Amino acid sequence: MDGANDSAVKGSCQCGGGCGSSGDGKFLNETPMLDQLESGPWPSFVSGFKELAERTKKPMLRGVLDQLEYSYQTKMGYWKGGLVTVDGYGAGIITRYSMIKDKYPEAAEFHTMRIQPAPGLHYNTAMLRELCDTWEKYGSGIITLHGQTGDIMLQGIEQDKVQECFDELNQKAGISAARALACEPACRASARVAARTPATTTSSCTSTRSSTSPRRCIARNGTTSSNSNSPAARTTAPTPSCVPTSR
Image 1 (cartoon, helix red, strand yellow):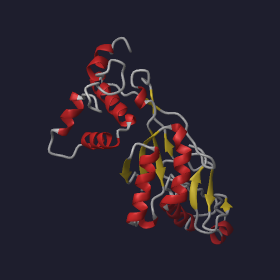
Image 2: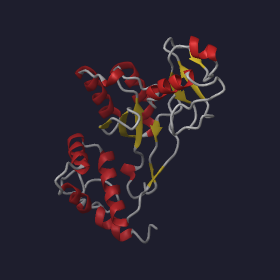
Image 3: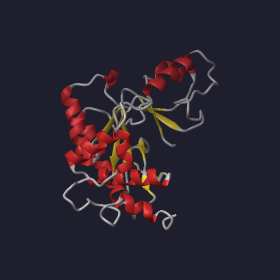
Image 4: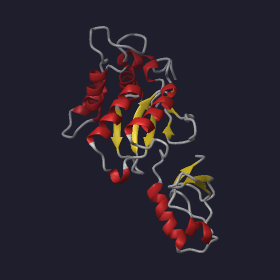
């Protein structure tokens, strides 16, 4: 595959080594195919990437743009999954490892952290500043509000910085990074269904997760309860926020 695509690499990489600036004083390399996505009538994610990369001078963003240009030229995607966790929590991070990191080492890792948003999605400016400052400190600076489950998507971080970012978000930003799957609304819906169904029925945490998936529930008072559907458990346990313990 590498030999067949060497000509495409030369077209997308201006430094000859698959990474770094073009050597003409510009931070970003030429990306003619991506540039076409900026020519339409609608806002372009490419423009946002370029603006952020030029402002922050983060090599990761330059590498991702270079690899995406290469993907457009070869009509192939080059991301693969893996496993990245933090102490005390085993999910919430979408991993992206580059399969061509030898060509584009600046894009070797581009993981996404999923963060529980503020209750009711009510933010204040201080909270948002803390979130943005922390994310630009450890990650790419790209933030998506919000993901499919209502979570905050912090896109682009290397594995060795994930734990520090996780800890700082919990300590400073006022946004819970510990419940990164943001499945509390789904859990409340499941609880309402369970209250109207026989005790033998097992409800899942989300519609895409098997009802037999092991999970634990962190109750409002900080205690841990099981996912039992017994009448006693439903009537005495506080409203939980479910955290799946396996994917």
